[in-house]
Length: 150
Image 1 (cartoon, rainbow, N blue to C red):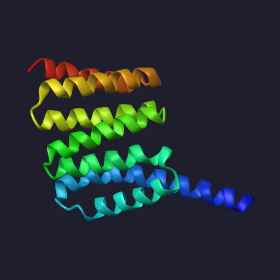
Image 2 (tube, rainbow, N blue to C red):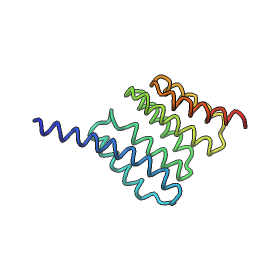
Image 3 (tube, helix red, strand yellow):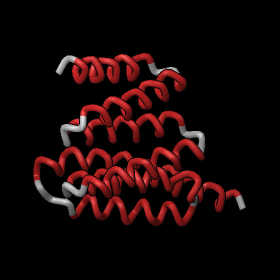
């Protein structure tokens, strides 16, 4: 029984690593114009969702949002960002809710949708404030100030 618990913990930690690796891949793939490794990360996250929807659904939705954003499918990206934000909120993962809001804000900024970008950045700032990360609050505030100066 102890070995089974260890196996689940190891699988959980591996899934967490794959999520953050997937986010990293989104940034690097933007430069390489290749999505295959990102698709693999999404497939891995689907497996993690099967293990624990509560822990991983928001992460899957965020990776999918980033893929849609990468593919210039703005409506699908926004729907997936919003789904990720809602899932993270429902799971009470304040920091991951903030991350999804932040990524949605950057998506809207790239799409030249200043108003929506500011709304998402404000939500991200509030989440990071609640989470207690002054570094992230300051970072998001600078993004908001930049947008407000345009």
